Length: 444
Figure 1: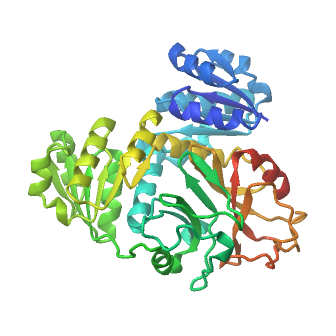
Figure 2: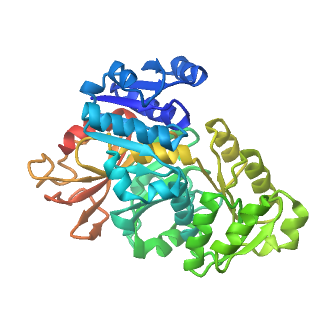
Figure 3: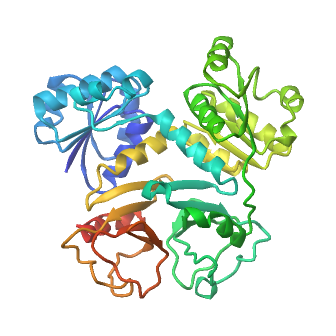
């Protein structure tokens, strides 16, 4: 498989990193020498310096034989032109573009004519991730599968949890039935076996039916109380989308924005939110706005330093749930170590969203964990699959792989070893990066 990546920024770098680890033939094009040098220092992929929309450059990159083009520069127009050239001149089967301008993103006729399938907006993907986290305040991560009827939720194990030190085979969750699909311990991801134990500060990942979220949270030791009030720092595209969505769900929103003109736009565009002109890291402002009564604090401005400072201030003022946007991957571990509840990177989210179009084996959706060290996949079992008719005990799964849920005719099964796999089942699969290729083969 040959993949051409136009754009060597953070999204391009992460995509190249994921794909190179799986021995996919990757070519990265960018006109910025410094960005290319960063990739050259870290990854073994082909690099070309030049304009990604140039027919000559795409031809040099092997577009005649390419299976996929990923246009992920910071410029929408460059991405659109690259996809158009890929479609018209080289007939590349699929062209994916990162599009930030909502006018472009929402124009399906335009996107189809340019050969873009699909367009992905980093801001919208990040905003959706934030809304999912607000819906489940106790969670560190929330991912939707089966149109939101199944969620994979992660929780940080508190120091007083009854699960600490327990061996997996001795943990029995029956009301509702639960299964831990993965553990993140620091930078390491563990697909658990019966003899593994849970430790303090582990992040555990569980597939959960939508209707079982509250009892699952209570079993883990968290609180299922819904969020009623949210304070947002940053009124850009992400902040605007989040506020608008929360208004529809009757959640009280206070939004702080530095730019006066942007505040005017927000006042016109939002109906119920309280718009405040000011600095989200200003202690006096936060106290005047009764931050101590806020359920969730969300720092999502375009300034990462401001986001971290505002988040730490909110934490010191007693806010229990804090969500922070970080674009520079170097800052992600720093923010996590500071005790921020949930740290999101729009660029990492975008890279993960794009990956499902690279995967083989009937992958419907996926999300990455721990900067690509593991993945959670939703996969369809089609006619001819070697899985059909086998129980989970009989299935020879690759090492460090676990089937966390079976979805059959919209019914969600948290499986045991005796459950059988049937044609047209959807499987929620947890796997480490080194086993992804074997999982794909198993699903074909």
